[in-house]
Amino acid sequence: MTSRVEDQSIGQIGLWRTSLARLGRNYGLQIGIVGVLVAIWVIFVIGAPRTFLSPSIYAAYMSTIPFFAVMALPLTMVIIAGEIDLSFPSIMAIGTLAYVSTVGATGSIPLAVIACLIAGFLAGLLNGVIVVKLGIPSLVATIGTQFFYRGAVLVLTGGKPASLVSAKGAIIREALVGRIGNYLPAQMIWTIVVAVLVWIFLNRHRFGAHVYLIGDNEESARLMGVNAAWTRMMVFAVVGVAAAFGGILASMEVNYFWVTLGEGYLLRTLAAVFLGGTSVFGGTGTVFGTFIACFIIGAIEAGIVAIGLTGFWTQLIYGLIIVISVALQSLLGRRLA
Amino acid sequence: MDYRLQMNDISKRFGEVQALRDVDFTVGSNEVVGLVGDNGAGKSTLIKIITGYHAPDSGEMYFNGEKTEGLTVARARQLGVETVYQERALADLQTLWRNIFMGREISGRFGFLDVDKMMHETEELMVGSMGFTSSAVAPDSVVRTFSGGEKQGVSIVRALHFQADLIILDEPTMGLALSEVRKLLEFVQGIKEAGKSCIFIDHNIFHVHSVADRIVVLDRGEVAGEFVTADIPLEELMDKMYRVAQTGSLD
Ligand SMILES: Nc1ncnc2c1ncn2[C@@H]1O[C@H](COP(=O)(O)OP(=O)(O)OP(=O)(O)O)[C@@H](O)[C@H]1O
Ligand SMILES: [Mg+2]
Image (tube, rainbow over all chains, first blue to last red; front, side, top):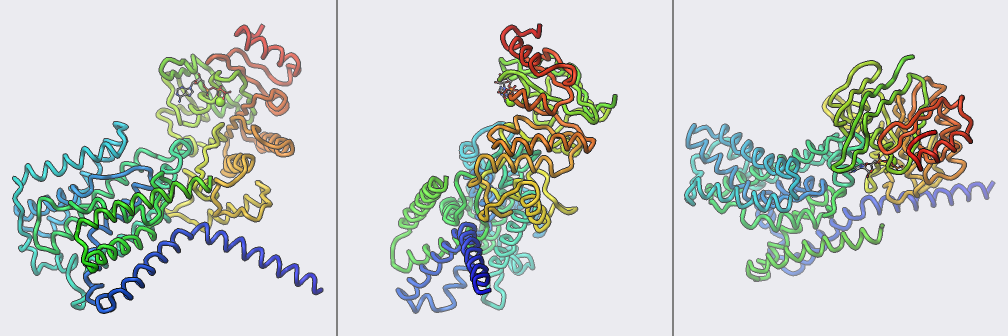
């Protein structure tokens, strides 16, 4: 009798152990990244309690982090698909230019926002077409289009910035970048909406299943009937839409369109994706990791300013984050293989 | 005779290599066809044309008597073709259930996945057909850590799971333990008994001779000959295979 009960409990423990191990394997990276965020937060609270215990710093976070977070989340899909996109900062500018031109031509702000997103979609789709139909590595293709899109903005505007004040008081502007209850920036809500949408499509839709498969092993995926070309083109197009959206959020916030819009976003956005545990080799990555990593990146930036270091340091640190993240991925990958 | 598949004058070239030249190939509606030939004879190329992966340069294809053009893998699978590829076609970093349902995910009208159902069916397959006993393996285990034979098992079970009418097995016994080979050959007999069809590629002529109704010999991209298995003793078939490899002709 007793021995049977013991056997069972040993079996139970064994079961527990294997499921714990599986939990660790499946969610280890995500638990780790949350740990990093908490650790950084604790350090900041101890180091500068007055700043980091007041609500205003968090309002500031939630107003600026969304501008790159809404791009980092879909960009995660591009990286999972085994590709990269360096052109999205320029697409931010393309999108807002489309917005400004449409407002100028029609005076309609809703129409202008739609035009902005369509311009982003087309720019992203062009990236996808170049990569898929011409077989050019995305690294090279999007270095090219990065300059092409930026150049197009400069040529079309003559380098002149434009004001977005006409949107002041408009419902759409309130919905995009207003302050809910005089505190919570609306763009934070949009970031959560984007995160949920990307999560659903990546984890609970055929599209996302195919994104993982083509990033993992394109040949296998195609042998089993996955339309790799279409999937690849669409992930680029989605990032285009997201970049245009990030661009219009950032411009609406300051009521101004600078032709340099997007510069400075490349490094922090990529850093967020890689820090979030998405593999540079394709095939693995999580929306959750990227989401948390965006806040780590934002916190680090605030920390750099709080310590009194110059902006030069941010580049150094973001660069370091990218290098360390991908190096860790490579080492971990080799250990598992 | 009713044909599940008919191919006429199929040719396929990869750059300088003429992989297939004017190949005629048929599979009856309840027939196991063995496909044999040297390395590089064009066997895998031929079956990848049937699965819609390669488009032939010329020639015609009929599924169940209906002509198909611009065949894709997805379309071929709809037409009831499932395949164990020589290269296994797995995605190592993905979970078992995602591999089982790769390219044929169970989803609703708008493409949203029914994850629970796929997990559940994977679980049943693991217990039922795969015979996985290791407790470390679950539907959401990543296949990268599976042994060679286990991966092979996943690929075979996947092909059998979808109740296909035409099952293509490209060197399915490679890397399998003896008992697993026996099980596989029984599966092939099961396909025959269930009224389905099968194309069976294997370098082991004993395996092919024991399960095939008919054997087609490919040589350097051309059909060198074909035999009804019942009419040709194993020794004679082996003699002819050697002769083809050396001289390019059966006699
Ligand atoms: N994708 C490809 N690109 C270029 N050449 C190819 C390709 N696939 C096959 N070939 C060539 O076509 C010929 C036939 O190859 P295939 O794989 O069909 O042979 P096989 O009969 O399956 O051989 P094995 O028994 O070794 O598997 C070979 O010369 C091969 O090099
Ligand atoms: Mg082959």
